[in-house]
Image 1 (cartoon, rainbow, N blue to C red):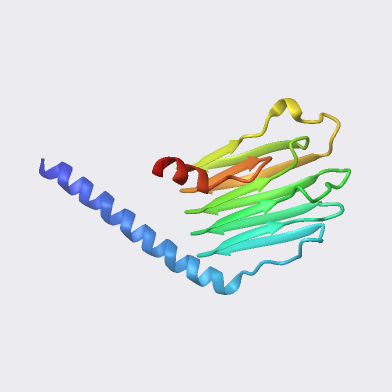
Image 2: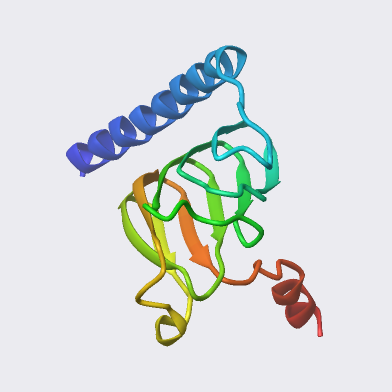
Length: 165
């Protein structure tokens, strides 16, 4: 019994220590990293640390984008963007946060995001995808966070309204 208590205490202590170190590193990183690019740029980098961000791209030929979400949440809306005919690359990283990427339902998306104690999902109707469309290739990871590809924004009010009814 003493061994179990010791192992649980060490595990809990390590978890708390890791969370504190992660928060300190995130605070330092927030001072050094900044988002670059605008809604009309074909290449942009988004950084969200201890915050939220809603970004709607209208790029005429989207080629490359990155999104880092750390202790926060972001929505990247690409419905107003056009992919470069050669396709586009999106690199995503979430740490204790979430990222929703909204794309037109006809876009081809190749998703290779690794969840590490997190979740990854593509909720679009795969029957609506145009096989001749340019490819959006999504790579990255989600650590203690979530990543979703959708064709419509999440309705965050719906679950709360249903729960109170």
